[in-house]
Amino acid sequence: MDGFEGASGVIVIAATNRPDVLDPALLRPGRFDRQVVVPLPDIRGREQILMVHMRKVPVASDVKAEILARGTPGMSGADLANLVNEAALFAARRSKRFVEMDDFESAKDKIMMGAERRSMIMPEEERRNTAYHESGHAVVAKLLPKTDPVHKVTIIPRGRALGLTMQLPAEDRYSMDKNRILDTIAVLFGGRIAEEIFMHQMTTGASNDFERATDMARRMVTQWGMSDALGPMVYGENEGEVFLGRSVTTHKNVSEATMQKVDEEIRRIIDRQYALARRLIEENSDKVEAMTQALLEYETLDAEQLDDIMGGKPPRPPKPVPPSQSAQPPQDAAPATSVATPTQPAQGT
Image 1 (tube, rainbow, N blue to C red):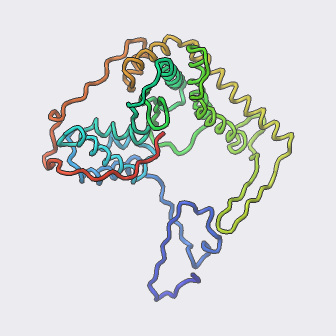
Image 2: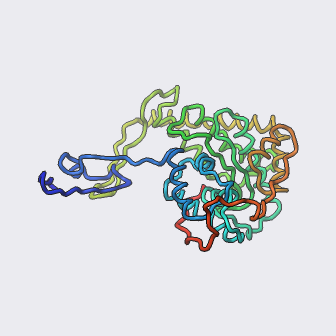
Image 3: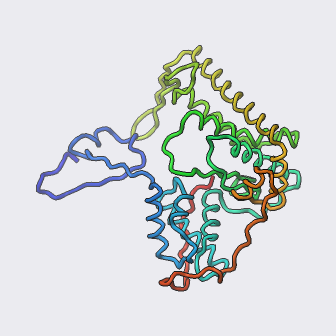
């Protein structure tokens, strides 16, 4: 590891997901002195990766790689391979000869939100509470300007969640501004507020929402310099990690009085966004009620149905699942004869 002769022809390549924990001696010139960062693929990269993996399965003519690429932000190459594989499995279970677009939608929902647990039977009160909870998230997200579009809302249990509100960004995003973070915090509070207003109770379903909202508010104040009261400074503690011989070291760099101000500022941000979300839900209670009734009837609402509700119109019925014979295969496609075994699924949201 002390370097190589110019005529030796030896090149050593190493990969890691944690360059921050490598010993500095490994990274000095003469050793691993060239670092290549491999980020997640952008929309064009995802489209090309999908086209490579879709060559292995017979796809119908309605499948468009560019549409799938827009709807899969943040997915890695392994996630996209898993998406194609899961879509092929869905098509095989439905006795189809070709993988259609609705199979890819089902696969995307499974990867992003978790597998459906239709065998789980919830009491009617808990089902109604879940519908109000998800409607609260969706209505606040639709009303605030700087939030990601709501792609789908469901009260079908998936993974460990009883219901989910799925938001997808319209384009790849690499940073977040202050107003977008504040709007996101307000959306997270929409579920609990809807429970309080319409069900007159509080449940444990909002625990993860509170955890995420508090973490974002704390980072705004202590790391991102987004607090007018405390200014552009970093507050907190630097903690080492037990790895490669390092021991845990804690260096306190703020006073108790400053930490008290940090806590007060975090509380101010949370209270303000909580009040904003509550005002929006109270002013649009008719939309929350309509969305809840639609969820209890259909169980899952897509973006078009949500737009109908927010526009004051009754939601259109769910789109019927087209028969497998309706989609025409590409000219060079062959009938499906086998389906690859599923790879390890990505973590659901």
